[in-house]
Length: 159
Length: 190
Image (cartoon, rainbow over all chains, first blue to last red; front, top):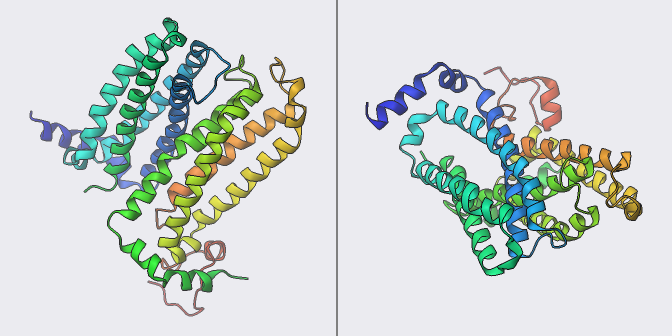
């Protein structure tokens, strides 16, 4: 089974068909996806701005990061579920959409980076000791998640 | 007074037509409008969650308001500018969209809620900046804010759909009234 036929099969599943054939389901799921987008963005930006030194200042990075992580994980879960449902309803369109592949590659890198390097620096080690490193990590995080957001918005304009 | 004649005039201006027909400027304005949600609503939500006592409880409320406030304000400016461009590109249909209208109602209520919070319970913040029990009125402001901004976002997203557009006649008199549709009394059903 090659990639395209896998995507065709995904689109033909009952879930994908139900969403595609309903007037309200796709927009409603998209709405949930967008609400979670605001929350995940806030949870990421809160920590990244703190790392750069232009957000919260009086609070240790670890405190901000630990708290933000709950909201990050929660909104990421909502995004993943709603995003998968949206994908199932138009898998073949996604297959031919370059922004979709940009989004998925950025997402893989962003998740990997966020839960390894960024997590280690913000939660475990003493982040205040190295402002330059913190800035690089924050800007990398913003760039990677920005790629996800770019791809996500542009899937809608493609095809 | 109806703003319809004004919107019709706006739709005929060169800028509106250029924006409407542009291949890139319109999608870019729309993308900026969506991405800025992260700054404006995303950081605003953090403050709301803090007021509810479910996030960053060890961070003083004033620290969040003072350090995140400027970002939220800057986000709002970008939101308003990009949103105005989007309206300018499609004035008549947007003006007659029930979703745009509900978005504006939610927006006004959200602004009112923020004003009530800042001119009310926030004045005594020194007494509950780090307190374990947050005043009920502050919690209420946070909860109302979350609901109203969700309303703004969902209404805004649904403007893109033409479910209740004025050219979809016949539709219920209530929808026509809410959308401000001008309907000929003897319009034959399609």
